[in-house]
Image (cartoon, rainbow, N blue to C red; front, side, top):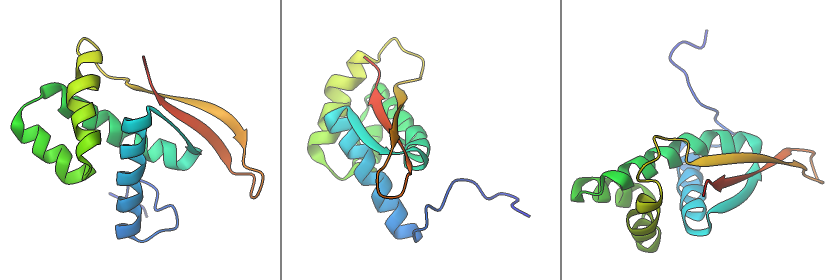
Length: 117
């Protein structure tokens, strides 16, 4: 039985998976758009939504929490300076997934995960 088990393991150990989540979240914040597999996008979407919500709060405690997760000063400053102001009046739903076909090598479904304007 799968009681209290949530999320996908994506065929990776915990450390590798968390590192991948960090990298994907930072790249999405920096570039505002990434192309990845559907499973990875579904896992990273709530992570980025929570980071943006913390960025909207804007206090020092949330900045330190985001910095401890993201570990990239330029991404954190963009999140708190630019994105927080953009999503100030929005109550959630900061990201969008658009299907982008299938990957040639293994036919994995690909999506474009982007920040909503």
